[in-house]
Amino acid sequence: MKDPYEILGVAKTATPEEIRKAYRQLAKKLHPDLNPGDKRAEERFKEVASANDLLSDPDKRRRFDAGEIDASGAETAPPQGRYYREYAGQGGGPYESAGGYADYAESDDLFAELLRRSREQQREQMRRAPGADLHYELRVPFLDAVNGGVKTITLPQGGTLDVTIPSGVEDGQVLRLRGKGAPAPGEGPAGDALVQIVVEPHRFFTREGDDIHVELPVTIKEAALGGEVRAPTTTGGVMLRIPKGANAGDTLRLKGKGVKTRRGAGDQLVKLKVVMPKPPDAELDSFLAGWTPPAGYDPRKEM
Image (tube, rainbow, N blue to C red):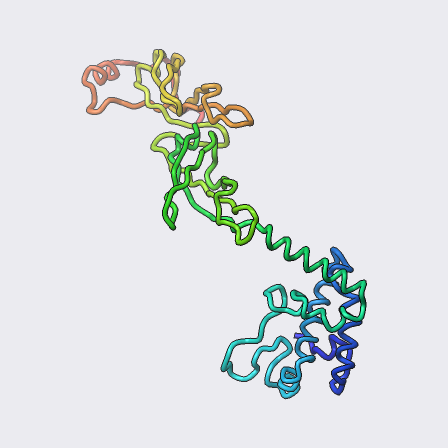
């Protein structure tokens, strides 16, 4: 912390009147209402106010000069009580109350009027200040996150809160419910409820951007000869045509069957997975045992 004497620009032997005069001059020059948007002036004003608060109090000044407290008012010896009030935005500083201005405002009608208006604005802002925002976490099933729905939160203090889930909501997204937070201490509006979404995983669907991915098991016959099979989507089953000679790992696209948002609709990407029967089928085993691949056929020739 800076030395309060240096902040006010006075000697350690300064009289109370000299300290008072130095404070008035600096406070008028640095007051935030006279320097809107000037953060440096605001910080200097806080320093000046803190220094004056300490040096204008005979007991605090005596204790500071004796090394019993530091420039912030904190005990320098092993603490036997609580710290003096803090200043930098924590409340209790002389620049936050009318009393802190009294020693210089009375000598300057224009400046006093400026301070009066500032105090009135602060009181009005406090009266109209909204209530606090309340934070919640809501776990949402995968399909509800894709398609939308309504979920209910049970509040810690009792009661419930219905949350409308928009289609396409993403994991980690925060929904703001206006006016569903804490009531205002004065006449202002209630705060908001901020609900963070946690999307639960699905057993076979995954999401990448606005696209839905799914792995679809097919038989060796369906892969070899092609045909139509029923494939699941996030809104229900659809018929999907498997091309003849499809391989495991081939991906088929269902246009518009992905996540629907205000940006539009994504697609569903269906990755084929050839699954052999279990237990093994004797007839299939017999057929494959007698099957001879065409000449020159080697599925691994490019490896």
